Structures are given as C-alpha cells and as structure tokens.
Image 1: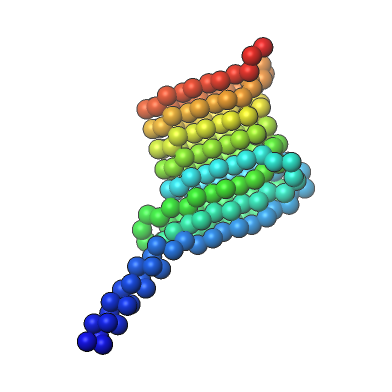
Image 2: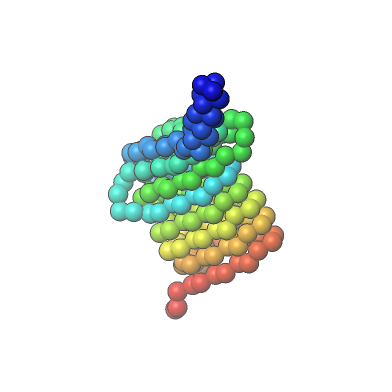
Length: 175
C-alpha cells in the first residue's frame, strides 16, 4: 500500500512541475538607439514603447523552453530554444520608442505599440497588431494570420505588409 501511495504522490509532483513555468526578466541600458531581436518558437510577443531609456524584457516559459540573451553594444538578442518538446514562451517587453525591432515568431500573437524605430516581423502563424506606429520602415511577412496596422506613413518610408492567408487592415490618421 505504501508503494502505491508513493507512486501516486510522485506522479502528482511530476505533473505539477511539468505545468510550471520559468520566469525570465532582464533590464538593458543601451547608450543609443537600440536594436532588439526576438526569436520565439511558440507564444506571444508584446513590445510597447515607453518614456524610459531602458529596455525591460519579461517572459514566462514552459520548462521545456530556455531563453537566451546576447548583448553586443546596443544590439540585444533574445532567443528561445526548446529542449525536448514544443513549449511556449510569452514575452512582454518595454522599449524606448526609437528602438528598431526584428521579431521572428513561428506561432503566436505579435503586438507592437508606440514604436518609431524600424520594424521587421516574420512569422508562419501569427496575428500581428501594430498600433501607434510612426516608423520610416515596416516590413511584416506572415504566412498565415491577420495583420492590423494603425499608424502613420512617411512619404519617404518603406512599408510592406504581406499575409499569404489572412486579412491586412490598415488605419491611417486623417489628413
């Protein structure tokens, strides 16, 4: 009877630990306009421009996912790596508005707000929401998913919003 009780208790502890998540949190202090790259396999990415000079990155990740960061000058790279099974990592990042962004996400929602730096987004299966964007360069390529853009266009800017299977909705300020 004790062996069975121990087995059930051990199984319950393994089930709880398998569902727990790891927390990632870093603060970066770039000296000039930063370039932030985020490469995620599965999960949401939310980047919001704020009125501080620092970048704060937070993520919750399944135990099967590790998050690595690399800093070279003002270039910051965050990358998820899966260990054994497909897990999920959800990012919440606050950046100075002039930060240039390069976002890669295989699966999961992407939301960028109040960004004036260059924006590049590549995904296989994501809905992409760009709100309050005033960037001279926006390049969004999604295989499957909707793209919503609410921002300004610079007449000398470069803009590409492409979804192979999804809607593209663009809202511009009135003149």
